[in-house]
Image 1: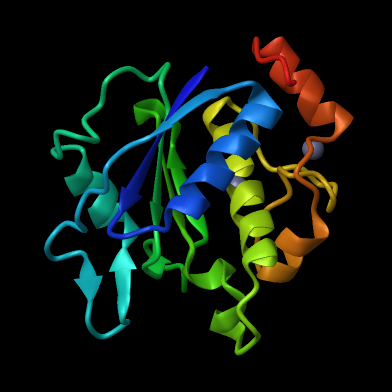
Image 2: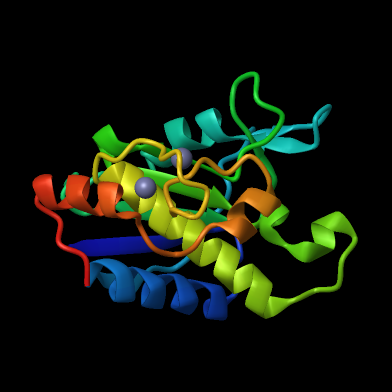
Length: 183
Ligand SMILES: [Zn+2]
Ligand SMILES: [Zn+2]
């Protein structure tokens, strides 16, 4: 599997590298990160002070650097901006498997968001779990009921911190049946 990692706005190189490494270690994915694309104009909801993920996903398909190539090549878009989706207060990430696109926000993965000390290790762990979770959805997995499995739904950073970067046996078996072998 090949994964394209695309920063939306400015995202630190180290973050992109840690995502690529996690995807390689989990899926054996060949990962390449691309030059950033700007946030589409009009995505910001000034009242909510958040960006509309649905709007972004809709607009971004016109950007030549993100343009749909092949659903066999998932595109993981990362942004520092806070995202919401429809009636949800916020989202950590969202996937559109049909178009091979996943969008992840780093905003609420940062300890600083919760008035805690900046911690690059905690941040990297959270981003990596969210990236693996998103690719899991892309590969056809649904949420898992085991709190430690990477496919457990992430309602809060506590959920993310509690789970591992690994898939449980059930999820791994489902991936195998869908033709994905884990490293
Ligand atoms: Zn999910
Ligand atoms: Zn599972």
